[in-house]
Amino acid sequence: MALRCGLVGRPGCGKTTVFNAVTTAGASSFDAAELHRATVEVPDPRVENLVKLYLPKKIVRASVEVADIPGLATGDAAGGGRASRLLTHIKEADVLIHVVRCFPSAEGEPNPTHDVQLVDLELMAADAATLERKRDRIVKRARTGDKDAAQELEDCERVRDRLYEGLPARRQQLSDRERQSVFECNLLSLKPVLYVANVGTPDALEGPAAALLRAWAAEEGAETVSICGKDEADLSELAPDERVPFLEELGLAELSIERVIHAAYRELGLVDFLTAGEKEVHVWTCLKGDKAPTAAGKIHSDMERGFVRMEVIPYDDLARLGSEDAVAKAGKRRLEGRDYEVQDGDIVIIRFTPPRA
Ligand SMILES: Nc1nc2c(ncn2[C@@H]2O[C@H](COP(=O)(O)OP(=O)(O)OP(=O)(O)O)[C@@H](O)[C@H]2O)c(=O)[nH]1
Ligand SMILES: [Mg+2]
Image (cartoon, rainbow, N blue to C red; front, top):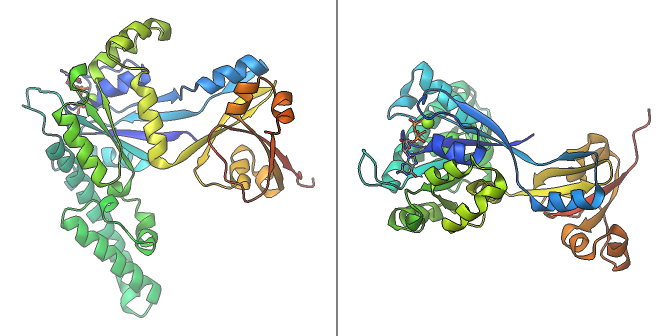
């Protein structure tokens, strides 16, 4: 399933503009109450090169789904149909892309940390309510001697109390057990966040507002991508090869989609591996640290169950040497077992025992 990214941020911070910049969907930013959603293929030059090599009948790139979630107004988390719909959209996201206004507007000079905290307040208010509901569900069991429930109750209360102190769950350095206890709550403020500094002009990409945001993000170990949302939204309307001179003018090597997606991948610890042949070139996504059988299971559950071994051709070696044969001759084609951790850019062939019919 595609990685789901939810764009969040204060009203008017440029979410729809950034959405357009990354998806080229051309959503109108006037109808702000509506949710926009688009699926975007992850640009990957490796795929283009493999296509030249294998001339496959079919190409399947990695894709991400981007949802432009309309601005949460202060107090939204307190209730109301619109608010709960917005929060549901946030719940569905694997990673939040928090867009922060770093350009001067009618609202005044940018104040990134203040804006970020306001959004976090909404997320934390919703989380506190979720934890209270869970508390109500388990409190009786906990009080009548169920030890597991008592432990869970204690953990949930501790996380809730820290929310009330103003600490989003992702900044609470939760223990493994606390994480386990709140797991089913799918807390919004525990979701990984990638910050986007939306600046007004290219010379502000590394300006003071972006720097403030970067420092804030670094405190929680998160990344910040600076983008010139408006300029890039205009650019994304051009054909890819027409963009190049304008990108150079903005001092950029690639459109923000690539930087944003790559950063989201890092934030979530995702890895792309590939299968390649005349039938198809296919990009698959797994988690960093996933062992070979788990990765094989992304392709087919039979491959995980009947896993025997994985043949690996590192993409870089194939690109350098030009053919599978040349890679094999150079001794770069490897056989890996169950304990192998799949690496980004591995081209794999799975050997497995098919299930008996
Ligand atoms: N100067 C400047 N204006 C921008 C930039 N990005 C967005 N804007 C403007 O800011 C206004 C709001 O942008 P949107 O993209 O609609 O913001 P939004 O976050 O989607 O707003 P809501 O959906 O209402 O929450 C629009 O008038 C944009 O043209 C930017 O980088 N520079
Ligand atoms: Mg909008």
